[in-house]
Length: 638
Image 1 (cartoon, rainbow, N blue to C red):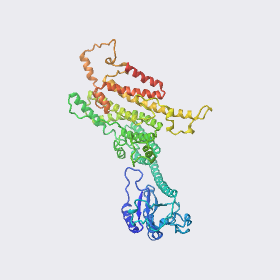
Image 2: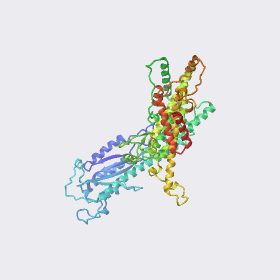
Image 3: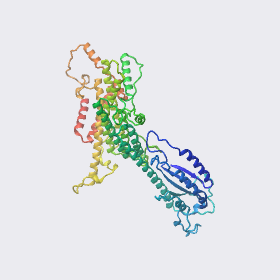
Image 4: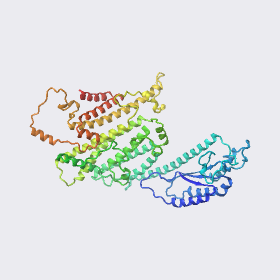
């Protein structure tokens, strides 16, 4: 909001200062290269102190007209509605002034009590201001009056000072009338700011439609279009319209898939994806070659017995986040890989879904809402401050479902990304057979540890009090949570008989949402457990056909043991050919378990994931899946 304060005795100085500010502040503003709704004021406010009618007639009215002419009239058609705004005049009435003797409106004046010298029928100061500045085609009320009480602590700081104990008798107002005046001011703030926002959004949508209509023209670039449309999505998110923002990100996701399909089709037909409408992405992620080279150097140092080699970087617990890299700058400059693009898009979608599902999530991380924090709507901040949980299991289930699809599809993209970067960096060099084998499992380690980390991140972010997963947690009862979510009676099936009550139907609907949430969590747990089991196989802790085919040293009380007749030299050669190492594992937990051969911790992780998955499958009533997980645990225990 733009604020201008004008005093009754020095209003001319304030007007001149305002002109000086205008000369510097109204220069042509260059739009930021990352588009979005402009940061110019949505509502311009003039705070007017006018103590009597003569002051208004001689000074204040002129100052108001000049301010309206200079600051509230848009003379540039270049930005159209990009800088749409509203304006408001707030007349502040102080105690001990002639204006305090006047009622708010001429129609409400009365001499019945005899305590006021105001003559009924005269025009009040508020009516004069409204008559002068509410004119126009839309007849919008842009004037509001606020009266300050005589006990306000800031009255002594005003210039000129206010004499509270003088002979002027103010018009008495009931507490209800004073409260209504403040509510009217708040309502005007809301309606006018939202009107400006709506006008800017409408103009922004027109810009997006214009750019989208040029999709088939040569030179159209998806990255530029993405940043343009995302600006509107972020504007929606900033005012609490999270669902509208999510729709825009989903549309951008479909557009990205279409561009990728176009590139692949062109590459199949012409052998070169260059020149496809929509632009191109860089061949691989910039960090991928660094990951591979770090792993190769560390492996070489380990085999040669050198201990001073630099350690590999370890990813944190949240590998997916929109602030991990300057993604938007990379997109705008067309220097982003498909893997980074997909990761950023999923990070934004999951953040919005988590915000809808939990109410206090920012960028995928659940955090307390500080006072004045950006990115939250007021009702969400109030709910968080009150400690109320606004969980929506349907939204949390959607996060997990998209997460399963993300780790499977983008995991393949990451693998292709790593191979492309490796071949590009070693082009022209002799590729030794052993080095080729090393790179195979290094890349596999990188991808597997990334998938495991993403699964753990999603499971942590979607943890819900409706579905406790501790060792002593009891099975959740649907009726205990049925009141936490809104009931949509219109979507319920018709009651077939009088014996079937609405209460029963509400419980059934709630159980269905809980079952879906539990099932998809269990699926993600088994996906993470599969990565753990793969590393266990490579360490020799797990048989290559599952837990029922354990290595001999892990079979308790083995009866007959098969004796291999191969010589020691043959065994040594075979062992060297199948050497596998920890290099490339970028998850701290997996690296510690494998590198330090923490076999017991490995079994603990496997059992914990299995037990939680089994409990979730039981709640989801997926009996067969629960029995399969239970069989794995039985084979491990027995």
